[in-house]
Image (cartoon, rainbow, N blue to C red):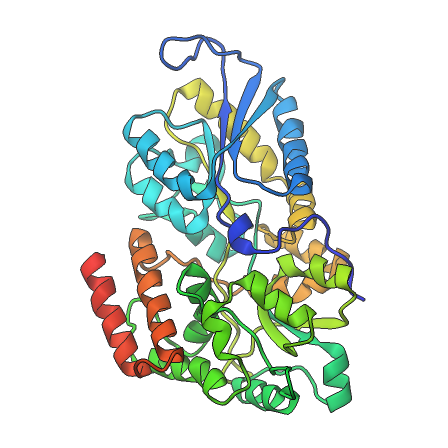
Length: 412
């Protein structure tokens, strides 16, 4: 059994949508005219797992303690996080250090409320390129992440061995393996095609590896990718219920033996270990072996809002500590993330072999906002709706993507 990864959430958007706001207080710097204890760090997050909350709290305490600060934690529901951040940005009342889901960074940066990391001697040297892209807006670096998550193909070793199959590397091999493994109540593959960011996130590796782009949803490459994706359902190797499944549901199907393979993330590995599933992990199959997988990068990213020079400097010190190699390794082990620094990720792959495929994919992973910037969310939703309509049989891939392009254009 692969090395167990501890302390994980069961879905990336429970974790990836986490936004953390850390108010690092400096002497004489108060909000609303009130003095603030210079030794208190006020932290805001949406961690719901007690174990993960304790782990992150310990990292914060250690980094804050280096500067003689303490941590006071607060929680905000995830669906209220970005509305609150945008309201506070307008009111010039953002906290001193903020962690947001990386696709939201550019939306916050667009308000003008963030400061460049170069002011504090923090830069993207040694980081994977996609992570630097995720933290940038209009060519300036505003945020960096301790680690990122992504997707891979997770397969049932026992079923593959019984069928005499090797894990697939190409789309054609994936189709053949799924067909061979579809028996009775077991489908060959499971994935999420729910009408939300999860559905788009799961489809993006197939879109990008086929040469499609979010900026041109009408392209033949995009249409071909959606035909492949919906074809898995039309051929019967994937359930039509994928349109209702989030990624936790996909995990449940795999654990129960109702799916021989699944597209899912590293956060699922602890569940598979706990359930005693004999599984393997490989990179997401691509159209041909000479094409590297291109997965979207998920996870939180740290930014420093404009407050006062002293408070910004304190925030930068704590963020810098969170970005150190050893902290990255600890963060990644606890959350099943891949360290954001290339050197740390290489060591992590050696220490946690089950994570090696995820590490390999980060090298060619992509920031979802790299091309679209703040428009990403609108395009993502339009694409998710197109995926739903196609799989449900309501329209063709061509017509669904044509409509998605129009909708995304009108909302951009």
